[in-house]
Length: 386
Image (cartoon, rainbow, N blue to C red; front, top):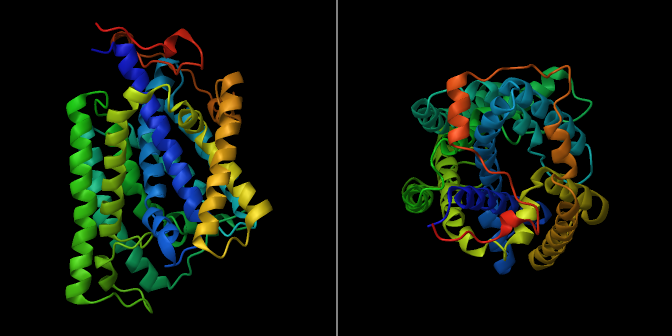
């Protein structure tokens, strides 16, 4: 058996690898191109709308861990989450001004962190019910808003008015909060689960697979029976669609299911490859830096992008390799990535002291969350059987 310290580290490493996989998936989609030409295009289409959902689910899990650490350190979770939201909002609006042709997800990410200050206080049961309700009702609200306002989907960026930024984040942007809050709820709920438990990990795999492929298959059947939705206007016939970024329930459920499946697989597999996946762990420990860097690379070197999917896939692999090399060198000398360091430094004007109640302090001491090991440290050694 693995010690509790080893199980905790394996769980953290699995989450790091999942973050790296999400970032790499978004790189492949963002470099593109998106067409039907060959096997490389199939990879782009398969990842479209799924890598970003995995990214948001992992954000929810991270928020749960972050809230626990904040309370343990005597800082209110609201201070920590508010600072991260503000930084992500500014970064997202700024990155959207670059010429890369990508819809930046960070503005919606920031709004999710603002909401997380209240969500982390919800009961585990209500988190799950909220995720399910959001997945079903969010797309309906999006359709109603689209019909009543006839808005054009545009991302928010620096220079927009506060009203335009708020509207884009909530409903009219490429990542509308009314829809994307569902996988975030799911992630916060997952963060409450004993992810180091083998039974839980297996359940994540098969329940995620059933949900993910089942929702996609249901969409395919409905489309064959009822016909393709009318793309010339936004109507409720779109509810049967599972196309990536359609904002529809079956797409949300399918993408969230596959995200849970991938997470379960990694939680099971990663403990057996701790040393062999060190490269991916390094990238996963600095996901915001990696995500930001790939947008800058696309804007400076690649945009308007490749014309052939195979060429785009090779370019994506080159970007991923560059990020891996940078991450390995950086993490060998520093504990956190460049932007991750900023996220962790809550400024004094937002910092509010908080004394954790004694019963919670005892609980934290009884169930410590292990710190990530630096490369070459004794914590990296394989645990002895207990």
